[in-house]
Length: 221
Image (cartoon, rainbow, N blue to C red; front, top):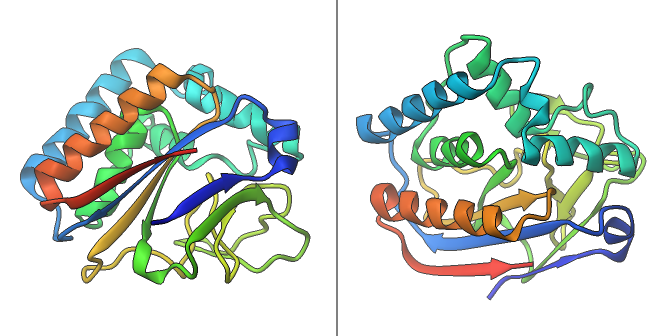
């Protein structure tokens, strides 16, 4: 079983952080019309409640940005992935459908306001994942962004090194059509236990509906 721990250096700066991870055996596939309809429904609801000037006030996004500042990173230059996604929706830009697992993670982010990592578990090394702070010069290739400066970003590491941040997941552990076991990490920087539980429940619902998930394990941390 995978273990996830939060480092003392991060907790000292963001003491109210809560997280939850889900692992499951899944079947990845092209995104179904039903899942995409869910993404579009969530996008329409988001536009009813926020615009590009108010989205930063959403609790999950606001507190993720505050965590970045506390750790020493500019949240406007290195926007959390949830904020990036929501801003794209609010700007009226089309979202790109990737596959079931990636689009499922995007649905969770839009719904919850939390940045959510979606990782191929079989590409991880070791049984322990640690959430810490990025180091100067630490190597990281982000999906769709190339080399990302993760110095002073919150970062998840396995025994090889960094593989996920709230700004972007890494190429090393990204999901593919062949992915058979997924790790989904939900980052609740606002520290809200009820909202995190609701986001976890929604993720479990989507996994059941769209990936035929089996052997599901919930890992609070």
